[in-house]
Length: 468
Length: 91
Image 1 (cartoon, rainbow over the protein chains, first blue to last red):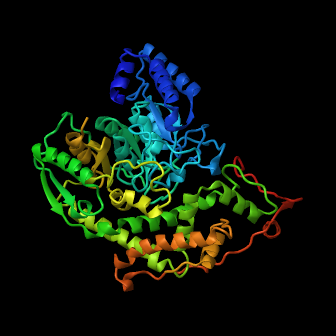
Image 2 (cartoon, each protein chain N blue to C red):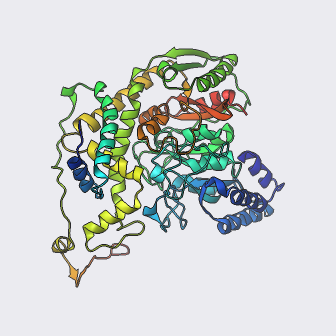
């Protein structure tokens, strides 16, 4: 059931928040085989639900998300709860504060029932790089749910919660949303505070919602959005409200199809399914045109060079001294080496090495500096195209969810899963993945990329394309 | 842009990671494959070479750290511990 319907029923006293939360916790327990959660917090969740029921009984306003159960990715801080990033590096670590985005949801009555599994520190596209074990796709338990927000997407797709928070650095909300058949939004960079989000690639990281309905995604984003003194990159631009129409008219809207995303590499069944959704947009009045953006082809190397460099720097803080456990050794240097080498997983170590190389003397000019220049050019080109288009549309991923283990030994194949999702992450544009149909029995997602700060524009187009 | 075992070892030292002798050749091969793929970035350029600001960086040299070296650099010692003045509620 959608979050807004649940909240309405709780506010009106038609449903008890305690019943709603007990139901969600039971569903989470029953879905253990998905490995979607790293931690459930039944006691705290039930206590908050009782408080909301008391508020309703006392005639107080319990908030727009009253009694709505939510799940939170294990890299978003919640005071006093485990903050593990699905890594042994943070075994037993408890968050000292709550992330701004989550605090804003809780202030509106949302109740966290648990923390969700993920690729370690956000590094992965399949949900398999978790120290807690791989998450499974609720639509096919033999397939990956995507990543890195694997548990969040699986929890929503399995109907455990109507809303889950993920974080998106290069597609980590949109790609698993696509693989699991749910809605995932990466807002404009700066729309939502990163305070309390464990940093991976700081210049790209954004918290985003994974939901079953577009309207829920819009409301959750609206609540989380806004300036925050704890994140100097947050923007002070109002987010426009979503259209009230169930299927709005798209008269006057122009949508671009980047030719680079509609040719080689993508599964023909995925392309046909997304093409059918494009036809629905045209039926509602949109004009659709092909557009050429050659620099999109540089997105994957550009993304992996920049994020690996940022990750190598950001993850230097995890050395056994300040966060999480440490492994004993005879001297300080050996303690660093032992702790980091034994507690970071293989993909995290691979990216730290790659990032260290990209920043190293003698190589950085050809790698990091050049990738930054390409990033600037990519933003210019996409901004320029979006002066004439309201949105760009393409498949979210080149294939549907792939079998567990299929790409674990081939990092480049795995990286290519993000080929369509990395450009808006590099340029900061908002991007939305919506389920638009199925191919081979698995969900297919369409990605819409909008102008800066125009989440409402892509959400409106998404309402037309969304297949439910 | 070939990466050999020696380079991987240097990068690992800088990153405070350990690479086993048995795994280092495989890792070098894997890094080469990834870096060859990333090397495609060379065919794209956002700005002219002469518009780029010169990069000025310190030398990338892995350096040893020891308890004794750290202790030598501290201003206040109490036995084997470093004495740190209070920050919170200090006035």
